[in-house]
Image (cartoon, rainbow, N blue to C red; front, side, top):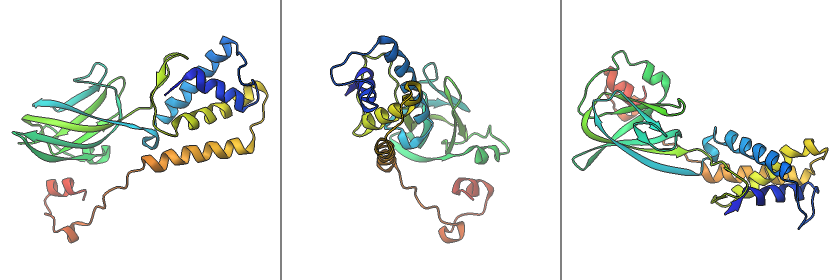
Length: 232
C-alpha cells in the first residue's frame, strides 16, 4: 500500500532531485500529483492495466438499456468494459454473449422481446456506462463481470492498495513524465526499468480469448439470429 507522497518522493529521488530524507516543496507535490493522476487516467483506457474486476447485477423488467455508474440503474464505478455476462432465472444461469457495436447495429429490430437476454453491448458513455440488451427480457437477473478503471489519488496522503508491480511502474512513469519540467535527462536504465514494469503488468493481466470456430465446424444453425449469436 502506498500514498502518492511516497511514490512522488521516490520518483524525485530516481531523478536525483532530492536525497533520502530531504523535504520537498508542497507545490512540487501538487504538480506531481496532477501528473501522476493523468498517468493513471491514461492507463484506465487499456484493459491491460485494469487490475480490478467486479460483479454487478440487476433484475430485468423489460429494459432495453441499463446504465451502470455513480448514478446509474446499477450504482457502481463506471467500468472500462464488460468481460462476461449471464442471466439467472430461477437459479439457472444462461450465457449472454458480449458483442461489439457492429454486431449490435446489425440487429434490425432491437426491441425484440424474449424469454432471456442473450446478448449485451456495452457503450462507455459518461458518467454512466450504457448496456444495450437483446432481446428484451423480464423476470430474470442480469449478472455481469466488469473491469474497473485504475484508481486515482484524491490527495498525496491517501493510501491506495495496488497489486504487486503497480507502484514501481507508476513511480517510474512519473519520473519520466516529470524529468523535462526539472531539466533532467532520464537514465536509460530507468527507461528500461519502466518498460519492464509496464510489460510485466500487461502479461499478468492478459486474458487468452476463447477460440471461436466457424459455423461449418460447430454445426451451427444458418438462421439470422443463430448466426448473430454465433458471431457469424
